[in-house]
Length: 443
Image (cartoon, rainbow, N blue to C red; front, side, top):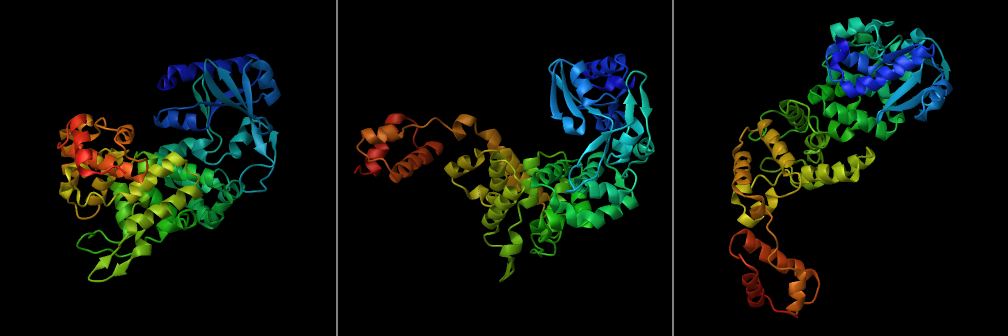
């Protein structure tokens, strides 16, 4: 049976809501993405329910509800520790800001389907009879692998500009193509995408980059004129030449796109952003001396990446990780010449596996030499976590007891002691204390 593909716990609550509403004389159906995913065999994460019951009636029927969007007909019903969005069939009363309707009126199921974004998202499912209800040709588009706007594409994108990005996201997530009229409308409206909040743009962009085909997402964003609107710094990488002896693949943008392609998709969004932005400093540092050079591009790129993350309202934690991926990506070049203490500090860096994966893709999308990558993998296996980050032999308290005044010099002394500890020259507390007495004079 079709519903067997849905996790039992998720399905039980949704069926209870549908049957309860029907028992009160209302129509109730599964709607939207859950139906789409069920029909193409994708995992169903959340089940939304569409109903003829008005929001007030939904609140009266179910004891535990949250009015998450009551003005737009949406009530969240809580059952068995899970929440389900229950939306009254509605039509929108016009859009003033290119983002959300100014109001709604409650309608029948057919009219509700006609106001949705894409045909593959406008399907209903009767979960009792397991019957698909299709007013817009969505099932045929699912079978053909097509993303098509419901009704008139220009009108759909005028209503909500975010649908421009969502069209690209669904295409790369599902591996579908966009129909010609929908594509033309996206090109016509791409210049208006920035009327949408950066938070909403960010969410769609990160889903595109985390999709099975992030490089295809970049291609579509470029083709439709979206990349220059959303990420002009990435657009600027196009046509920036690189030294062919290191980058036979082509310019900076071509290299970056190839990294995303080689990755195979399904990336953590932070790593995907790190890949996308790792060379974003190259256009601003391009110079030709004895050859093409990009001196300081990692540091410049880190600053640009931080600005981009701020614009996209990316969280502080994720921003720090992305900026680190950009700033540190060249540190793999001298890795085999590093002192043991420097190497151990390097490989204990936060999220080092993400740094290592970015380096692997960087190599594969350029010269193809993975010697430094393999060396780091060997070192990760060779050193235990205790060897890479051992417990300190001495502390600042010890230095105070030895007569040192607290201040910047503490860090210098403790770092020098840790260097020797990491290299195996100091192995015990007393030995470390004797080293400090011998090498440093207390003030």
